[in-house]
Amino acid sequence: MSQSERGQYLITDARSLLEDALEMLSQGRLRNAAEKAWGATKRATDALILERTGREPARTAQTSSGLKALAWEIPEIAPLRRQFDDRVRYLHSQCFYNGNCEPEAFITGLVYDTADYIRDAENLADSRNQGETPVLATKRAKEMMAEAWAFYVEAIQLLEQGDLRNAAGKAWDASEKATVALVFEKTGREPQFVRDLSVEVAYLGQESESHASFRSRFAGQVEDLYGDCYVDNHCDPEDYHEDMIRNTDSFIREAERLAG
Image (cartoon, rainbow, N blue to C red; front, side, top):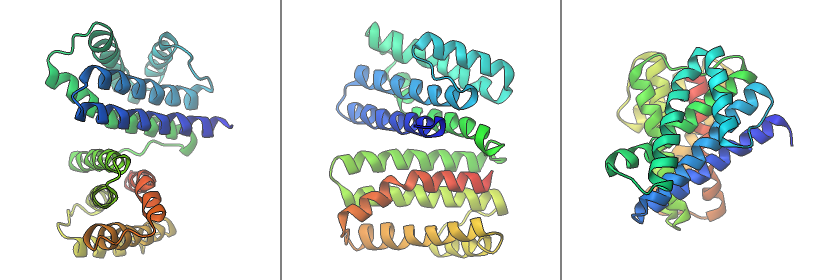
């Protein structure tokens, strides 16, 4: 397995652990959810360190020191380091090990915010290979992209529960929100309806082959996830729609890349 493949595996594993954490939250198991969210945090951080240094930490102490060193060298990583320290303290040590998960709203918020942490770690890791980190200039675009990742996590959770139709709906919500963020970042406009969003994407598709490819993929998300599976409840073949739902994460990443 190449370094890049290993890094992507760690990110995928981080998202899987987050899915487990959200499932535990829904069951009222906050302490266990905190530990799963911590595991997702460590895996995502290890992916970042691996991509930046070529070395994968084995223990938490190595992850912490590795991230600290990177934060000194690369100012953009400093905010992630502060978040990492908070997660070690509150999720891993205080809540899971010591059983002190108060205040519950704060710990629960940290669990949910793990989706943002994974995304940021992945973007910072990708910058080593792509030459730059996708950075959104507007606060509104950043907020919408964070919402897109939250919808994606919900979609995977619904998928694991066997609710394919509603999982498709959430995956579409994620796709739509990421696309609106892209359009807003490029044009300053925030389309409210699918037809208007489709028009904006069509205009962007004229800019480059990358934008044209995104336009085609967006059309597929509209037709297959939103129209066929969610609205018409026609989700056959199931394997095809499951793959589309799971691959929505790459759709969001592509929107981030084009917007950045």
